[in-house]
Length: 161
Image (cartoon, rainbow, N blue to C red; front, top):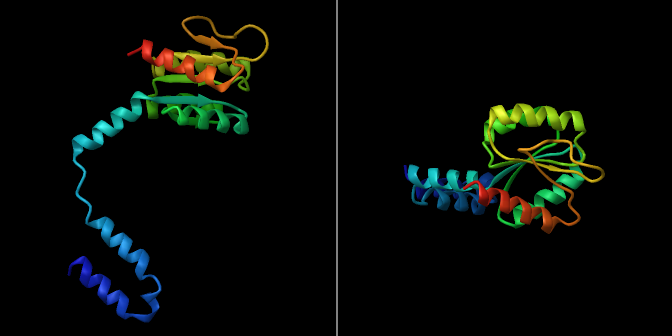
């Protein structure tokens, strides 16, 4: 039985008649050409090339920062529980780990230490007052505007390619 026959059988049934428009859309999507494995791998690699892991304890500020970074063409994985940052680093294999200013200093140092072993990528510490907590090879920035963060992130990613 093909897709058109399935659609006709549902359209004849009164209980399904009101659902026929969404069903048509579903059936049309079934007709889409298959995506090759190479296309899927290219999409994955392209996404990974621009993936940033953003660790923050302030979900409101993190969502704003995430939206700004994504509008600049970056893929952002947001972690609001710093204790899950290293696991997320292993899973998503980002190009950069960004630690927000809301992450306490001791957690920043722990994440910095463990993330360097789990996924050897640059770590950018954002801080607001006082000197940065992390030592090189970490990057640090005291951002005043989101465009400053975006410019800094893109510079770090570009330098690592």
